[in-house]
Image (cartoon, rainbow, N blue to C red; front, side, top):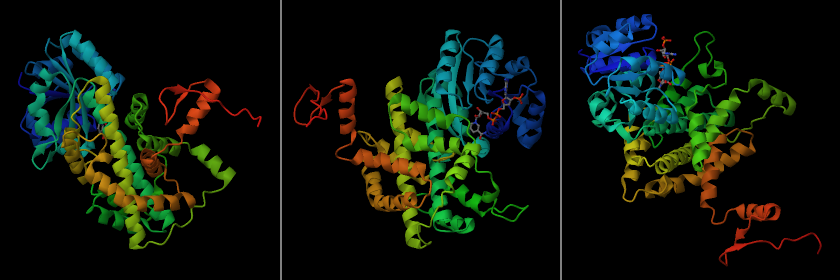
Length: 473
Ligand code: NDP
């Protein structure tokens, strides 16, 4: 036995992770349910295959590993993980480590940890972000589960992770479930970030009449400012591409119906469960869902007529700078919401999630990597940590400076028929938080009238009821 670790699942993520592990000098045993994929992965690995041990059965795989064995699963989330664990268990010894590195629901990780630790095995639920490129050259890695297991695999995971100014973007988040919970919220924030970028694009396209290539130039400019991020960069790439078949901008050829695999929706569900507003994330999840309702969209378009999106202005540098500030406002607020859900989950489950560390390991490797995350890690490093990112003096200052532009642009957007669900959800969240007096006073009145739920008064302690006007003057 000579392999340091096994990677099970040789689809796009698993094979790239295995090559990354091999490149860092570790011996990695690789296995896939259907053997052809294992052979393909080896062929693709070129020189790196020297550090890879192809295994065509679970017996071979288990025999190839140094004890205590560490087996990293990179298979389809859900039933495939359960089935693979069930197949592995009879061949493993006590103390062996099973790592689920797919996009698991954190509740499944908690359940796997309980079941496996009861049988003497160790379990880690690990979130990996960065897509194919990240897996190959350095993803962001969020680890949850057994500390003993973490210590055993830490050298491998730390070595293969992305680096931000020399620091590895791999960290221990807490007990089982914590790694996948953090990864889930990473993806929820990713949904919001992408949707907001698309909304800003829509405002320039339909509201300012700009071409995709002119908008690409704008986004390129933004890669040098506060919106500097991987998602901003790939937006430039997307908008610069033309369809070879038709010569049209490729973005215009793409069907406007977005897919989703579940992590965004889980973020919104967890937020609702924890009672923490994550309206920008929810709006982004809903926007993807709504985009898929093609027949309803067509029917509504037919019944009510086209949205008749009107111009919000002309493409002057001033209005473009205001759209940049609008996107900045939305982005800060969406991240603030995402971190609030993390903080609430941490409290609820007793995880003590390291928020500053989370922002740090998201600075490179993962899909939401950005300049702003560096400021977020600094904000959460303060003692005491801010109750919300909005309260960090730097972010509060940025919001104050950007808010007038965001209000103006989103006002124009709504008045002129442009759909901007995530950006307006974020703005409304802030407007609600900021209001010295909320309109739920009226809601409390209604609740007391129909259900005698009572209310508190601003001028006296205790619970109160009506008396309510009855209609007779
Ligand atoms: P897929 O999610 O497409 O999964 C395919 C792999 O799962 C194959 O190895 C397949 O084996 C295996 N598999 C499917 N069903 C079973 C089963 N019942 N028993 C055993 N093995 C099974 O692969 P990806 O590489 O895209 O993703 C792997 C994981 O990483 C997923 O959880 C995904 O959500 C997550 N992830 C993906 C990212 C991406 O950019 N793609 C980014 C970050 C995380 P076989 O070849 O035999 O069918």
